[in-house]
Length: 124
Image (tube, rainbow, N blue to C red; front, top):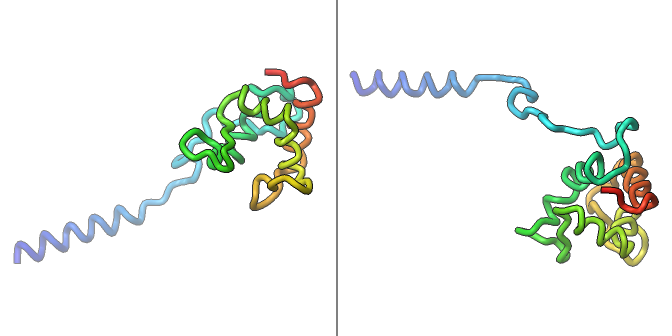
């Protein structure tokens, strides 16, 4: 009987603890989140480009998993793909380039921000 009671108590505690609800913000704080489409930000790598790359590209283009042998973890790596034209051609989904990100295009404001960065000679 004591064994059944203990099992029932453990199951009740597990069930009740599984019903705990919290807000997304409390579970996943956005400390350091930067909206790269914020027009008050400059089109520099450190103020906006690295956030666009981090949220849209880095999961497939990192040193652990270099999709297409492309790594976009640092300023120099991202700049090199900007300089050779592959970054914008992929983002713009131009013929002859792999469309990136593959599932859906970047937001227009993000594309514009990256193009401004390139046009301004890749400010860090």
